[in-house]
Length: 375
Image 1 (tube, rainbow, N blue to C red):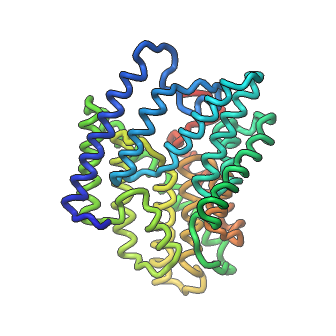
Image 2: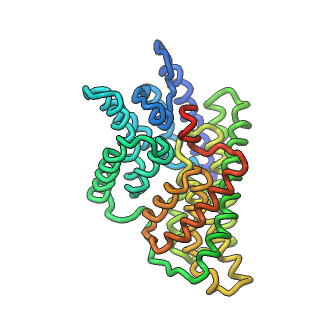
Image 3: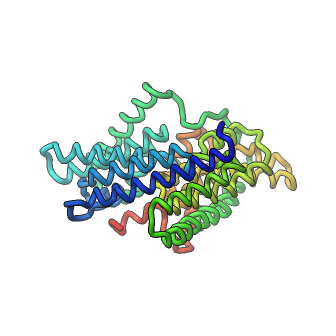
């Protein structure tokens, strides 16, 4: 944020070029003298019961992600964090002389621990792997996953920060919260579907550029130019979400930031930058919820909608549910991250409706479908 607009654009562009160079050269290094599925994703590995993540691929993707995230790409840091956790647990599973079924359980524990610690949400880490990676069918992994996620989150609380990821004062519910949640589910379900479609379209456009460094460099340059005018799109947006949940942000400003953030995320993710889309989805939901609440209050009694921060919380969960097609995980994660458990029922309703809306359009969710197996 302290960089001048021109330097911000330059840093983003240089970061994209370097991240793309790392992916291109690292990809060749990862396949040199190797055979088999060298680019197996940790989600696909968990679904297939495998633990053989490629060491070189993991290192390459992690270094590229470090450069992208560090130079302002509009993506989350949770992707490479969980990738590393999965790789380390998979490596440990290969060393321990146990049955193959137990080996896969160890790697799944690593994924849950990574999610739980990254978001200060241990229960969400469990639900993530059960709903997205395993489809609730692997009963033998439930107990180990619970223990792993709880342990990782406990270490984060003791060693780093003993509070939820997003700190906000309690928000009071209104008698119309369920009606508001129903409307939010409809609107944010469509918004989540649109975000997925935009990301896929962006990837298709950037795929026309064969050179990875040029592809990521162009994406970085465009994000840098956007951030020169709207600095809030720089990085994963954690500080902006915190401001929205604190309240007091004008809807006109938030609407501009929202549109620019969606564009920046499409550019970063579409160009191939390695990183997560969870945090940008939470950003979109929080800002869209606050904007909707404030605009609607201009034409309706404020008492009907309540505090805009409440709709921001509902929006975070609903958009995350729509883009991941994992409503249970979205419900638990957002409530844990914000500590607003009084909104459990409205959030459940909004996530259910958003999931129903998003799945009607045939768009593939961010992590695919656990019953389909590896992609």
